[in-house]
Image 1: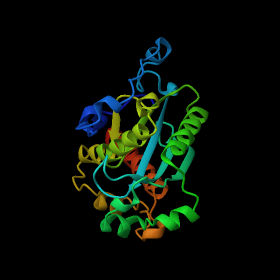
Image 2: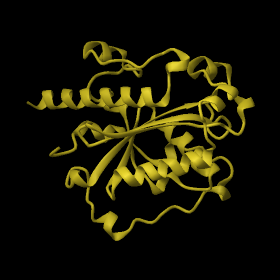
Image 3: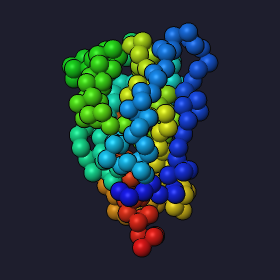
Length: 237
């Protein structure tokens, strides 16, 4: 990939816009400092071989980060073109299952007993698994988190790491990418991108509760991202 295209400028989202810091400031782990080697990696435009993308999608017990919790996480690592390198799926048993909203149950089918049977793990174990996966796949490259609804996924990821007294910032770059913002700049101003998916024949994810997971969402996000890259290239050729 020779350069980062202009439409990416609209989808960079800062940390403070996507995290609920209304309480427990003292519980936030200290932010990591960039090493000199990390600073020398340049930008995705100048040194694309030093960067990799993490397409993240989460399912939760509700819509309020810090009160509701993550119940699964799907992550697909790709290169900057969107070609898949590896993937990870984790089911997580929340510490407050009683807070699960009816709407969340309808969407993702969360049930404490079912999750127990499916091998769901604690938040701290999920963070450890994510770290191991990240280190094995990234191999020293900088990682850009990419999501369909970036403020939502980043906020829940932040709270998952806080519960384990760790910081997600140790894994991902300060800026994250938001897929609907990419599409918006190309003229697709439907937040759910149904028009884009129909026009480009992009396969959707299942919308049946027991089949709708973070990994199905993350893989759909990769498919959309790759089509957006094709559209951008078509527009400049």
